[in-house]
Length: 242
Ligand code: C5J
Image (cartoon, rainbow, N blue to C red; front, side, top):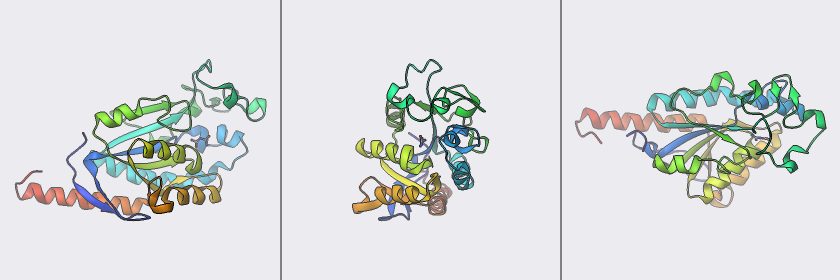
C-alpha cells in the first residue's frame, strides 16, 4: 500500500470523485521519444508529433507533486523485443515497409526495446523506485505484470496521463475499468496527433455516467492532492497520526 496521504475530492466529469491517495497510483502511458520526438514511430506514420508536446509540462507538474507526496508512480512504454518474437505479424505488417516496427529510424529501430527512440522523454524520465512496464500492446494490462503490481500496492484508483488519448490511454482505461480500478484521466496531460480524437477519446470515457471512468485536469488533481496533504499534516499536528 502507498503512503498515508488521505482522502480528497477530485473535481471531475461526469461527477466529482473522492479518492484516497494512499490507494491511488499515477500511471504515465508511453511518453516515449518514438511518439513525441521528430524521427520516431509517430512521425514515421505521418503524424505531427509537436501536437503531443503540450501534454508534457502539465504531466511533469503532476509527476513532481506525486513524487513529493510519495504516491505510487508507474510508467509504461510500448515496444517489442529486438527479434520481434512478441510482435504479432498483423501489427508489424501495417504501413510502408521502411517505416514499420523494427525498421531502422533516426532514433534506432522503431519501437524496439533498448533503442533510444523507445525510451521515455527526458522531462518525464522515471526515477529509482518507479516501475516501468514494457508492454507489447496498446493496453498496459495486456501481457504485463501491471495488475499484479497494482494489487500488491493496494491500488484502487488510477490517475492516467500519457499518449495517445484515443489509443493507448483509452485501451488502458478500458482494461483497468474492467478490472475494477477507478480511472481519472487528466485531459491536459494526455494528447493525440488528432485533436478531434483527443476530444472523442475523453468524451467516450466520461459518457453515460462515466462508463469507463472520469475526466479531470492537472489543476483539479493537484488541488485535491494538496488538500489531502494539508488534512494529513493537520492530523499529525493534532497528534492523531492517521
Ligand atoms: C500508438 C500509443 N498510438 N501509445 N501508441 O500507437 O498510443
